[in-house]
Length: 139
Image (cartoon, rainbow, N blue to C red; front, side, top):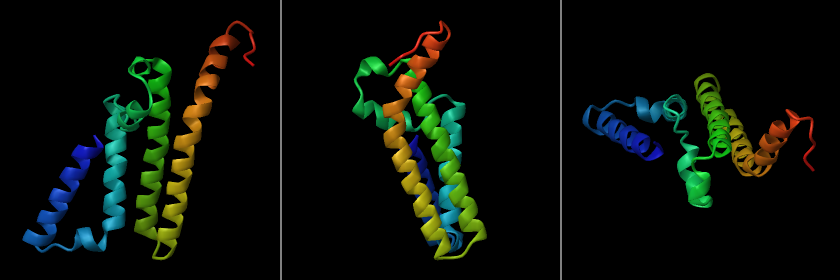
């Protein structure tokens, strides 16, 4: 999903900029770029193939790929990234530099930290939720 979106975005941006002499991809690159990333993340969720799933497959054995928890974790991470992409698009639409750069980078760092920490903590959460049905505690 990310590869296709990147190729389409840069093809359209290049054609618009160099062939049609439009400056919108230069003047509004932050807003347009982040909004396209938001749409990519949203579409990946709608079609039930979170864009983070492709990256996660590199780090985990194939046996995990069809597990409901694995898919749920990737969906949650994609939802967070969709929120970050939309927030950054809005920031670039409403604020001026350097605020946009600083705030968008802070959001990206938050997304990276979440993407690292959440997959480590989420499996225990999912397991404990399952056991709570039976009033069992997981250590």
